[in-house]
Length: 313
Image 1 (tube, rainbow, N blue to C red):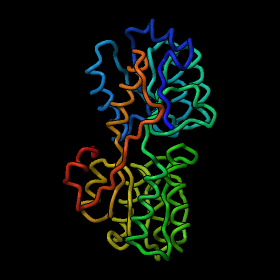
Image 2 (cartoon, rainbow, N blue to C red; image 1 turned 180 degrees about the horizontal axis):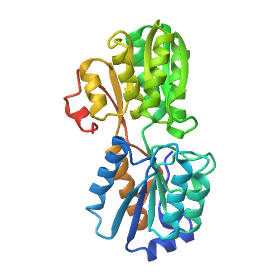
Image 3 (cartoon, rainbow, N blue to C red; image 1 turned 135 degrees about the vertical axis):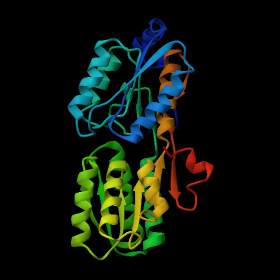
Image 4 (cartoon, helix red, strand yellow; image 1 turned 45 degrees about the horizontal axis):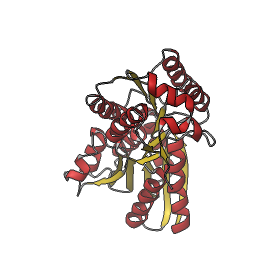
């Protein structure tokens, strides 16, 4: 059951923060700024701050999702300069937990977006906004079974092992396939969210497994690299390929038939609702502890519909 939280209800420290932080900086810190997905989060955060006169907003992130120490340093810097609140997409659930605890102890409310923190850290942040990654992985798995069949090999191209979104998204995809079909899973292989790495990994995998019936690319750079490898190998349309996220490259691959579908998160909503959540906390307004930002399976058939266009970027 979802709890209603206010700054005053969390701790006296945060209640004090709400009273003194009538105006201040909301620091939005994502996994990397070098991604259309995270830039769409920025657009959502920017849209939210336009309607909040009491605060300003900054947007930052490391050069890559695997630069975890750099992201920790960005959060530490935000705490040190006394920001009013933080909206954080943690690259690593364990590595970011201590610095989020430090923010809590400093009286700085935090909204976590996209990926969760380590178990036991729930008391240190006030809201979690995310796609239900497990449900999204299961939805992609069911689409795979429906279109590729229930026997054969399906490869899984993942990104950074152990990230909260990856655990739900990929873990539930693999588990669902195992529980509902006789499909053999190949992988997962981890691209570290590098498109070129995913391209090379997929190229090698396709060459070594010419009997693949399907392949799943679990985030934006991984799915783009996967799709380009499929095209370069001349195998577009020869196996069921499902991606994740929705930038222009992935949209083109859906339209061309390289990808049967791509699962698109509400990245704009993560930024918009994340900023609104911490602004509400600072104002003493109740917020729910979990906000589902949704996912849409975008296919050639529905890509031009409003439901798809509202999440594509």
